[in-house]
Length: 289
Image (cartoon, rainbow, N blue to C red; front, side, top):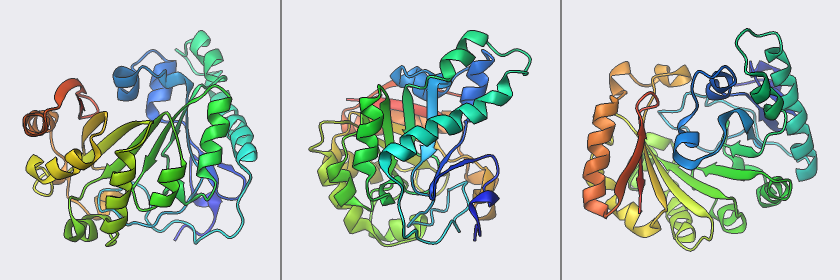
């Protein structure tokens, strides 16, 4: 188990239970070496994106997860949303301070990065376990941020309350048995309730499918989920053989981009969606209604 927050290397800890970390693509964007697929697909600026989590705990044990599964024990005290917002900006500034002496950094982008306008609430843990996630999303929105919130779908009450700019349901499973096998718990009933709620949301909605070779790459298995949610977008994303997932999966489970593209084209034919874009380096394909 992660015994203390200081064990999370590379993270800036915020308050009692939150964290911020700069992602690879922010660093690349600052040096004009590329940008993340979210910029390519949705138009956000990678160098102005704040990646954070308000809950360093998770209620699933997904086989594909590159993060440590033995996170902190449940928290009993929770910080105020305004505090998390303000301190997450300060944490981002601390992380950015190291780029001032880095060769090749675009100085205009670095200056802009100090004024983030996009928050990816998806860093580590399950963000909806923060009991005031709806208020936190609203604080970011009021301060000019677009908000991308990623959930595993096991807290439908929180999903019903929250209204981010873009709401993701991230899954690998397609029924109760596969959910138990691939995501570590049998909470499929809650995920189905989240699907029902998402179908009625005003927020833009996304189903993110993390795909593993010889595990869940039959698109027929996900047609019913797509029909239930009718998301604005589907992201078909390859499992990446990184971090702690290497303790549970062999490298052969990581599909190629060509396999992801083939899966996506088959899913498009089955659901009426269209393949709209792709990022080969990230092994992800975007489908849209």
